[in-house]
Image (cartoon, rainbow, N blue to C red; front, side, top):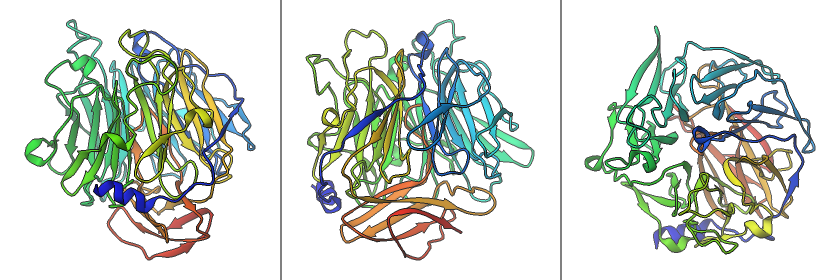
Length: 487
């Protein structure tokens, strides 16, 4: 099969299976009733410029927590305005002032926090509508050509004011575009209870589309996944080559794993975690024996279907290909779904993925929700953060005997300082890796920071950037460590 051959070409043998060690951090729990069955996102980002990322986690009925990174995997609570009702958190430099800000998604009015570049945050509206009474559960951002500010998408869940709800009462979603007179609002209707959103240039035509992953638990019928065109200002459909599955959509993971330069997808759900591999015309279902569908618990005696939430690609063993982490957990007490539902860590071995979470030490069975893979201690290995519902947040240090890696940060003057929408290619004798700079996806949060490329046995690599305006930079030699490419 084409994708299996491409995966095999990218793969390099790892020295040993990944191993993670638990890290003690100040306690944080995502709590609440049915309005917090979903959500529980975490933002991992550097808010003070020391290259050690902080952790900001939604708390549901408990306050949002900010943990400052003091180095050596030591985290301390840091001041933050008290915000409850939060379902998710995303970090981005909204006003292009060089400091990352926070978008806090809530059940009720969203809250936006302006960063000062030293991990201080203050409530600031940025001229944005706060969403009113909406139950916001998804977010993504991109930067359109010539725009002074990013284009923002907010995905909303059930309309709590609908007297006929909650079933069949999915709320509409909102697209915000910057203009000379402020933000222009476009209501994306119909909404099908979005739980994840992602702007991505899936077909590599230079213009991103907005993918919405939707929960059929509440739209019941006549709903599906959605793809919005920014150029045509409409949802795409079968006539456009977009065949939308109807799933209990909860998270989006996007990355090129086949080597064709286009993003492949994992869409988390109840039961199968759908893996969609890119084709010249869109996406096609991956073969089941690829090993990424993770449809049932892989340990224990509970044989009921799994419930997937946050999914994220990341090269945890630095062998030059992308592995897959999936956070799992029952919604609450759904009898048809597994209760002891361990998280997945699926190791990319070329033609297929292999479950290694038990040996790695991350197969916990709490009701996991949001998560992030990020290098928390600057040692070149991806560590792991997982937010749990009604149980403490978990942090693990990657202690694997892994290869080396390159962490790539992009920077450009003026608007879009973090180069959202850029593509970075890295090549070694083992093959070509491609990653897109995106903000969104996952489940209610994720990591914002350098793109992580494992090098395997290579001592150096060549790298080039396709910048958001389509300009292609030259190939340049890079060595293991941190690299900042400025334009």
